Image 1 (cartoon, chains in turn cyan, green):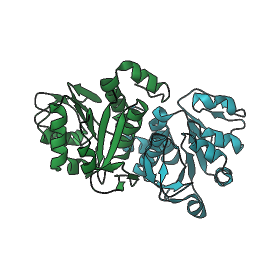
Image 2: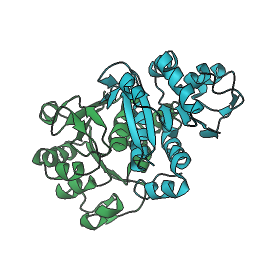
Image 3: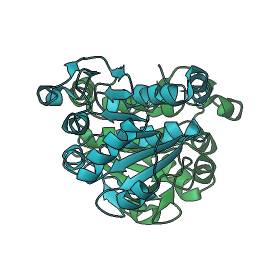
Image 4: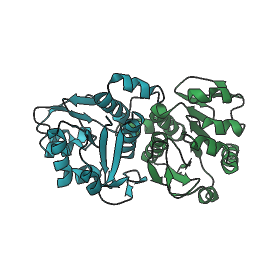
Length: 184
Length: 184
């Protein structure tokens, strides 16, 4: 079974976070859809412009997803948090037995969706105070049932490989990393 | 003095490598030009399309650069190696007192330019046999005078921070990493 993953991005997304997640999950064999929330060219917080595969609306029509992963960066993380399509997509994916993930300030969307209640979670340090329903962790990657969170661009590689582990298992992590040489 | 860095990309570039280098160097305050070698939209080896800031020809008109850094990925690394504009740009940058860097299979271009003679260098394992003029190292990042090399997407973060250290010094590495949380 092909694993399908949705990665939405809007203006100000953190480029390393988004691209590392997409690249590593594709290397693992996932079908990853990079969806533009606010246009067909989206510029990140460090000024790099990407061309998404499709729009968020088109991507959401092609449910279900095994996983939705939210990159951080501002204002992207706030845009995702404030978009009812994202909130509904996160809830529905979990309800259907899928997984969700968020890094940096993007766990704010998981909080808004009510998905951190009773869970361990992490984020960029500045977002800790707003994750009021989670038990906060400062671990670099936190897996709490079907909800994965991580801290910043510098933890994106470990986060992406943790997602590979959740979707495909540890053997796939080792296989992909034999070509990537990350320190995991 | 603003530090100017040129990062050329062509079809098949490794997305994590290119984006991590650009993002981290921009966070450090460098003026980074992401230059398209073969078009105004360039798709990487994992299917992510970026919009370069400018074309390679336009970028090369705006010399000098303090550093040229080559991402890997195939066929990008071979395209860069076989492009006389890249080879001339690398030689000229070094001759003018600047620095050059390459990761993954892109050190092949440094070899072609004759810039690895008498130097330590690394690369993706598969390119080792072709770096005949270098003393080969399996270190994750190798700094040999003004020539920096590294191994793969999983070493790109350490490589990018090493380039920040070369251009701006260790205090800047710590400053940028306080927001990024990489394990260096």
